[in-house]
Figure 1 (cartoon, rainbow, N blue to C red):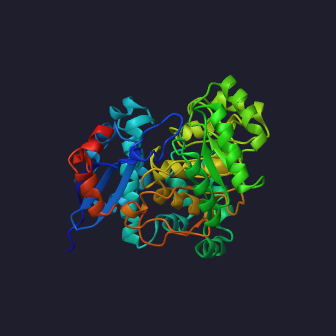
Figure 2 (figure 1 turned 120 degrees about the horizontal axis):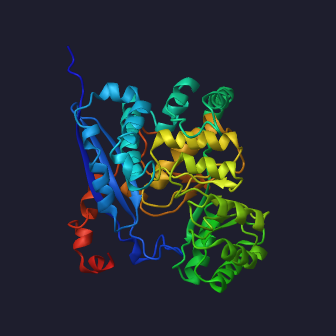
Figure 3 (figure 1 turned 60 degrees about the vertical axis):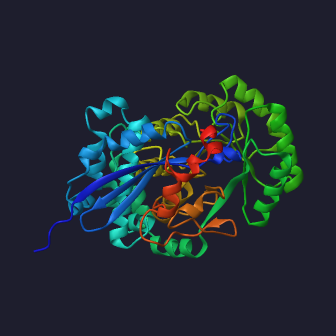
Length: 440
């Protein structure tokens, strides 16, 4: 008789990259980020493993690791097959821990920790199935997908029956869409040129490279100084022309009145959208800004704490573009709920990426959305930046400005061992360099 496989360890690593050295990732609210990952490995008795992580920007990554480790009692010793057969139940169990829930509920460091563990379990399931995560989910029945979603707090906006109807519509033509996605991918936009700490010369050079690489939109960080923003947008228009889409991102910098006044100055340069103009938790402020700056679209979602905030943004007419994040909420199950909510309200989902490993993770949601939920949309993009992909087993592939469909089994979350070791904080070789220690 075969011995059942069990989960024998939940291993957590504090992994940090010194991106502040070159101001990669810099914006008006986060001027000196060190892109980091609280990295999870779920190890089984038969030698399999699943991988996940929470993205942070340096200090506090140790706090995130401690939150993940607090979930150890829910994981170690579990029967692997039973757990993977009921990942909806597993997600609800972690979210429902009555004592840990007090630290949220369903938001913040503890909720992100749950997301990392849930995502690692999904990675393990996809690896065992021999499928990339997006395709594993796309091949599930509408009923099985809906069973993954926690509809508590959602039914005033989206019921189980409405979600089933969305997925049943999405099942029509699914095979043809999957074939097309595997052939052509999903369009990307790039934030690589637009970090706020870059010189004008570097901005112009990277804008030209982005256009030559086939990207159909670029994004610039704004919000620190309005005159600086005007100058950089003018340079961007001079470089790319009047009709090239240029999105802007304020990273939560403004109050409502400040946002409206600032965006009046930027309006002549016709931004494709303004992203995170105010607090990510302030639904009514987003709605007020959207009304005032129309027809300039408003985008937000990368720091949206839960499906409940997503629901309110959509109900309030506060957002034109929803930007879910693979490592901010409670994992695959909750992001599935967010995709279904966006489909119900007919709002495009353009996933947030950029941080270490986020491009690798979020592509699976965009491909799933295109395959079986929202279907074909010309207004769907995935964010892309060029750095740190070399540290992953299954890095994203961009061809002619589009993401290629991931094809290897799993969720593309596994980091290469040779990359992990030198970037472990504080004892990895990168952090033993006095220059980088001072940068922390």
